[in-house]
Length: 123
Image 1 (tube, helix red, strand yellow):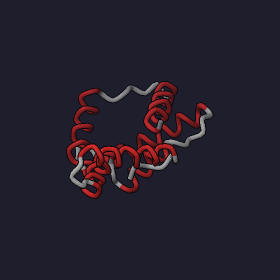
Image 2 (tube, one colour; image 1 turned 60 degrees about the vertical axis):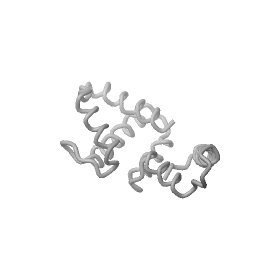
Image 3 (tube, one colour; image 1 turned 120 degrees about the vertical axis):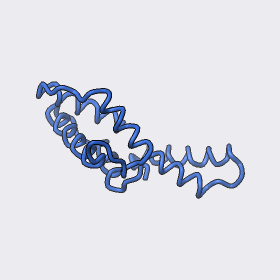
Image 4 (cartoon, rainbow, N blue to C red; image 1 turned 180 degrees about the vertical axis):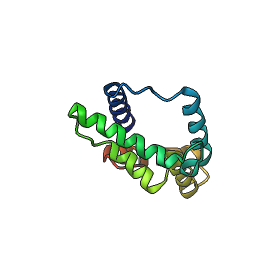
């Protein structure tokens, strides 16, 4: 839901401002850097600064639409804590793994589902 809210707000604001969307090649480069290095990634710009500015831009778009910004707070928390979902799962795996793969997977999915139901960030 957080990503859906982000995209709705971002695209709405971009349309309103008649802003050209960033190129796919730039987005791919930034995505690959973020996948490899998380929030410490460097592209042509600082990834954290890019995310922060895009969240603010999406928030303006949602406000323009009169939509209560609720789920973007999850993305704000990820940015504040500098923990991506992938990093969270890797850490949880290390903490919970007891030799049984299926049991550990179940525990991690249950933990993520509980956070999702409570609208809590995965951090």
